[in-house]
Length: 317
Ligand code: TXA
Ligand code: MG
Image (cartoon, rainbow, N blue to C red; front, side):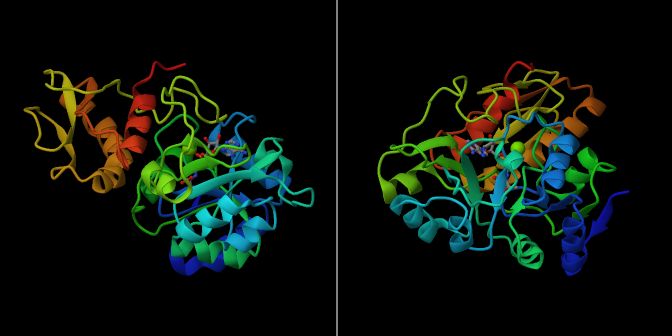
């Protein structure tokens, strides 16, 4: 049984986490699949429920920067980024302190730990009620589309987790930006809800691999976020058997999901995963066998959107 909870049930949810159970909860980026980060058995259950490979580490969610930096070795750059962007959709990878009580499995046995202070009030309330950090990946089955609603979570994880807290759709819609600060030059592991431009204007140049096929973060396998239907990128026309993922004025097509008529990248990001879930559900009934996505500019949140679409379109392993 997977209980459906509301934001008034925070204490119930915290009790479940305390007992070692898994609870899906809203964050401003996507829904997370939470466990008590200091309970190794509960952390192991996350990997089980998601079907996630054990080499792929999890993000730990903290109430404040001070609480997070008690578990990792912060640097001046980390402090600066935390002051500017936390709470919010930014994850920092830093060296674990020897005293860090987070389960080793949460960090996949690495010497580093990914930390984030989420802005969503329900996430904040849950972390506060538990009184410990919450380890949480996105609340989807490994390799599938990330969830931005409780319904998306339920479709993938019902029966595998104790509860889902429903607080409506996530507003940012793509996952947090993951920045590795454990090496001398900051390195972008995953584009996300805070743009690269915003980060670089604060701390200067950030290294990154421009080609999504060459990957450094354990979770950044090329095929990911995959809808059931094949996805074609940079479409300038829509074939008769394709459904359309539109950005700006739509092309002629029998089925269209509009990401942003006015070409607003933040709006498009907030609707991206809903679009993939929706097209996957609705295209087959109309005998459409693929999704064609219009081009999206590669700046600001467009970098994160294109990263997710490239992975969604990649050959399945
Ligand atoms: O917005 C988000 O980040 C959401 C919400 C729930 O916080 N979480 C999320 O988690 O997207 P997940 O597990 O789906 O993605 C975490 C990414 C993975 O690509 C993982 O490999 C990387 O962060 N990561 C975690 N710890 C790491 C570490 N120590 N070193 C390098 N990469 C790490
Ligand atoms: Mg994920």
